[in-house]
Length: 305
Image (spheres, one colour):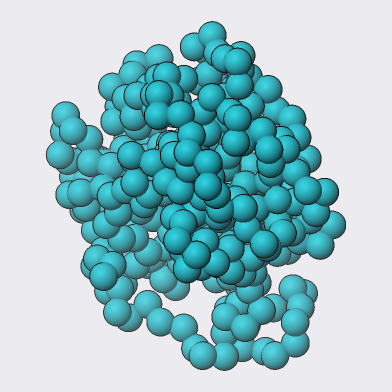
């Protein structure tokens, strides 16, 4: 049962969540013509009147770019201003997940992106651990990750997530926690809604942007942190069989944060993950505002003056 925040940003203002409704004829509902973001908002452990947002500027930029792929202009400052108002209105006192969403709000039936109305909304819900921090089991999905030539994968386009939904349900119904998708060339792409990392011989490896992945913000942060911590990193194609013999495998994402993979198919993976543990510990300190070296990654929103 989701616990939603009491107010949503809808129609350019904050309204009670129950009043933020759309028509059954909404274009985006039928054709997946929307783009969304995901942001975690955390009450500052040192100041309950302050909310911490991790890399809010990067999230706003990606959503703005996603909107452009839908031929819609949505400025980064507009997004950040709405999020600030949204948080000050709701005043959350626990960790929450924010879902900003730009979508075609027109009621027409033609599948198109020209001459069509669009709108922008935000809602939020309380969210702890999306995946178990102790680790998850994964299966290789029978579903293939889409290609950029068929969908604009540089954005978080809502219609693309039918594949993620099919893969996730297939995994859960067959006894696993999560799915790993291969791309059309048979290389590892990503999980249902997370990027993937593995460690081999002390090198942190992740599929590159040419492997039809989403350009994850947590992924980029992990790579930047690893380099600063002296951990060798490599972005390259990853074969399925490499995962079974990797020293460490883990997932990253806004909702998943950094989550270890403990089993893939019938293969149990190593339980000691020194590189992942070091990165996760550092990332947690940053998101909680406890790492001055990366304070520029944290946006602080005062709930009261």
